[in-house]
Every structure is written in structure tokens, then in C-alpha cells.
Image 1 (cartoon, helix red, strand yellow):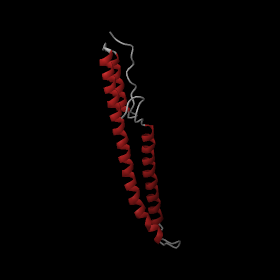
Image 2 (cartoon, helix red, strand yellow):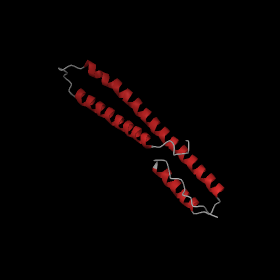
Image 3 (tube, helix red, strand yellow):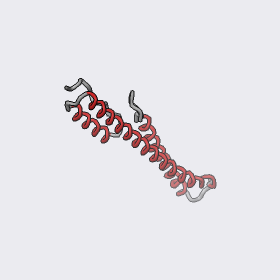
Image 4 (cartoon, rainbow, N blue to C red):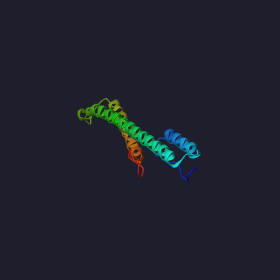
Amino acid sequence: MRASHEPPAPLPVDGAVAAAIRRVGAIVGGLELDCACRARVDEALARFAALEEARARRERILAARGELARIEGLVGLLAELHEIGAAEPDTSVFAELERLFLDVSDAAARAAAGMREAQTTPTRQEGHAP
């Protein structure tokens, strides 16, 4: 006898994983399982979703760390700015510094986007720990 029960909502923000969990949940939702078995399957899906959320968040953090390392390297190159005066005869140095600042900006924007995504990745659903 099938109990009236909805499959757990997919938790990860990660698109492909969320879609896969939704598909599995839809298939499982159509099966005639007894309540105890359905609860175990739902719990397994929720645990899988939590693991995938943690994986996605870890990837975002690692990517942001990579951007931080890139920024640190660029800041080292930007230290040349301390040695440049207003009378610098080689104006190409200003274009080079501009590109470095733009690279810092791009890296910071990528890191910020990853941190924004990490904020919107739930780490738990009511009743389910990660």
C-alpha cells in the first residue's frame, strides 16, 4: 500500500546534480513502497543531496582560494607602482599596470561570485543534517 508522500525536494544549487536528484525522486515517488522503505529511500536521497551540496561548496571555496592566490601574485607585480614617478618616460608601464589592476578585478569578481553561490547553497534541509 502506497502512503501519500512526496519525494524530498532537491537541495543542491548545482544544476546537473539537482536535476538528477529530481529525476530519481520522481521515479521513486512513483513506486509503490511501504512507508518504512520509502522513508529509508527519502533519507538516502537527502543524505546524497547533502553530500553533493558540501562537494559543491568545497569546490567554490577552492576556486576562490585559487583566485586569492592569483590576486596575491598580481599584487606582487603591482608593487612596481611604488617605483614609478609622474615623470616616468616609458608610458607603456601604465598600460601594463592597468591590465594588472583589471586582472585583479576579474579575479576578485570570480571569487565573489563563488562566495555568493556558496551562500545560496543550503547545507541542510529541515530535519536532515549534512
